Image (cartoon, helix red, strand yellow):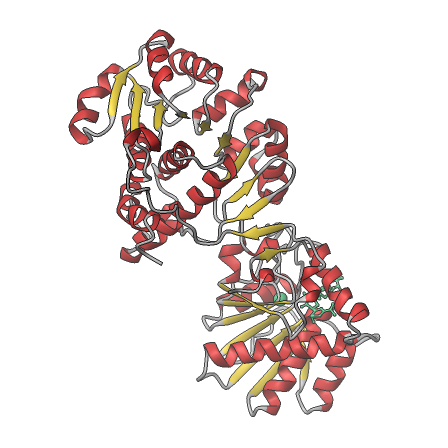
Length: 495
Ligand SMILES: NC(=O)C1=CN([C@@H]2O[C@H](COP(=O)(O)OP(=O)(O)OC[C@H]3O[C@@H](n4cnc5c(N)ncnc54)[C@H](O)[C@@H]3O)[C@@H](O)[C@H]2O)[C@@H](O)CC1
Ligand SMILES: [K+]
């Protein structure tokens, strides 16, 4: 079994507290931790790039730079050709200054880098400019150095955090290193897995530096990484009534595809029955394309009432629009006290009329950052600066489980519980993917999951199905391509 801290995620403040606990509580000197961090990163370098012998190490002014100096020294002692570029002159005391002195004493030349100078020839760059201490956007000359490293065309190994990425939030306030591998130390930083992080970190590995399990047992993580999961097998005496009845409401003129995808995903995610309430004009095409979906004309709220009486879970929003038709259906659906997944225009209408939302039932809201911003009354950039805060604040405000979509989707519950999805790929940034997720989560609710379970399991299945489907290529990936792998993953047929 994996150690618990392997999927625990921490804020930067918590990681710093873990560092302190190792130093003060366990009596391991900070310099020794730095040496172990450098050794772990150097071992990863050799494992991932066994042919590399010539490296350039870029060291910043703090302890992240200290890790870099000690890695440079270890590589030099192992017979590598090592160039070290420092952002600052040697100064002061402390572990980083000691590491630099040790590096120079060991025979490694350290050169101060000045803007405009070419980078040394190297087969790999080690980024040790900034770690958890990043306090502002990298300015000159660091910004130019970061851009030069990114443009070098050779692999980049980032120590602890790709420089320029805020390890607390996953936001880059300015330029940031785009690494191939990030070896992170002691505690997994929550900001390495969401927002802009996936564009910067490359693969992420955690090095726990030989510290004992007790160190993490004393710390309550801020969040967790989702783990692969499925539903248990169906009982042998199952009948369709036991797997729930999802009613999808949406599909204004011109958006029939959204409800078809949502409904089909609900079927493929195991709902016993799936009905669709939509514009009458969509019925022939829906019936022809997917006869398992029970498509109903809903020209107004009255037509919805008998459908609501039979449904056990509602999925409201795909293609709903924000016009009079959509608004009337939305109001009626909100009044029915059924478990609910609200997406797309279902959320935009909620942003317009938040007081309509009173509930005592399981609810999952699935906003992308733009919808989240509308619900919070801020702009999308504010959501991007701290996705954790945005997701938590929405969950608390609406008393609902919130899925904040985008690279590294977040699942937040009222009270602060939060999971981060480590799967998914840029191919999934295409039309219909959100409709699919809504249908999957609704189907899981219909099969007896709580809102928290349905959201986490649904996000995980959706992203992993996306990764399976993207083996055929990210560009050109269609939402419908996820349905076959989704079914296999849900049934535990793919690891
Ligand atoms: N003893 C410990 O606490 C350990 C720390 N470790 C390393 O230490 C790092 C944290 O070290 P620090 O707290 O010294 O922080 P950093 O080394 O990440 O950066 C802090 C330094 O960079 C400067 N700085 C920050 N942002 C800047 C910007 N945008 N432009 C210019 N200068 C900027 C700060 O003024 C400060 O001098 C970790 O990420 C990790 O790599 C590891 O060695 C493991 C043990
Ligand atoms: K770094």
